[in-house]
Length: 249
Image 1: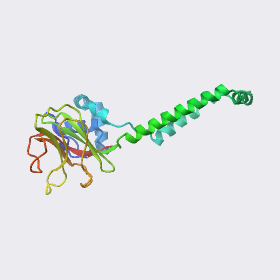
Image 2: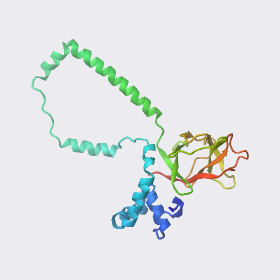
Image 3: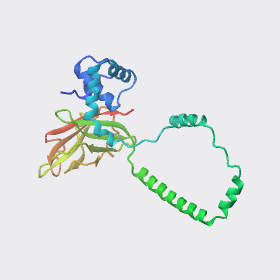
Image 4: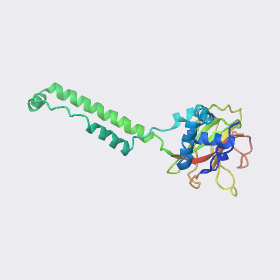
């Protein structure tokens, strides 16, 4: 049985099978940094058993890739591309460029086509901006919610502005008269707080606006509750899955 991600202390060399399994999972999720990241890369190269653990976690977590928003290339990448382009010989100018421009100026068909192309480009740009505006912000914290048999069944993403959403990765049958309730716990003296209720396993914006900003190792869990939610304000049904938040790289 796989170990929960909290079974390993960051920065400490792995010793037990549970710690090795947790290191492999964190490596696949991209949660490692510094010595831990270097250690995981080295183990993949020299330890066939650890490499197999990594591949096993990749297969189990493969659906998470579909939840990650596309990110634009950073400035460093563009600089490398521009550096490569500098070594490509320039295309020589046409010797009669001025004459060609004069022809185009007098060509009504050309300008009609150019106007149509410009209009199409504006529509494409507007559609692209609308998609970008609707795209959720990149998460800074991620919690992989594990079932009792250690399958990743849902992901909680927390953005830099504090917003959070739940993304189910598997179908959860909900009996009649029951609902799935999402909870978070950051302070044991206060106890778990309900942040979402749904009758079906679907993407859900969590109600965290009035709560303190989420932090690493904050618990999120889903329980099965009455259709209107827990009658006590605390989890009463079985815990279907749970996980702790970790920083993304």
